Image 1 (cartoon, rainbow, N blue to C red):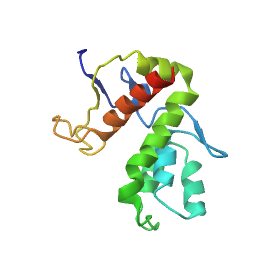
Image 2: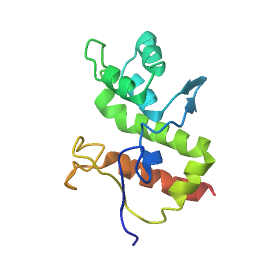
Image 3: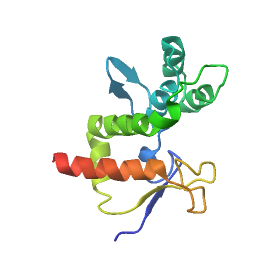
Length: 148
């Protein structure tokens, strides 16, 4: 088994794996500047909220807008958020061939979003978090290998 791959900041090695990395994705008829924009926008059913977040100037601003509870969160968000992330990540790694190649080149390495800021999508900084984004990246890698 290879050494685990840890990523977080877009400036780091494997920073392309971050949802903040500047790789636009197309889902449906819309183009989203980053997977973060798409993920945050999908928290809301109001098209106006989604569009405002899609047009945010940065993924950081999109994330902040997604956490704004003045907007009405979808009732089913907790049950759909992982699939929304899967959809965004799959779009990113199928629409950008250099990213697909980078992900496939990780072989069988464990991929970890390493951050103390998040123990759901990341590892919580101490390895005790769920690392859901890392898991989705590894699942995506498996699916891409099957599609070859």
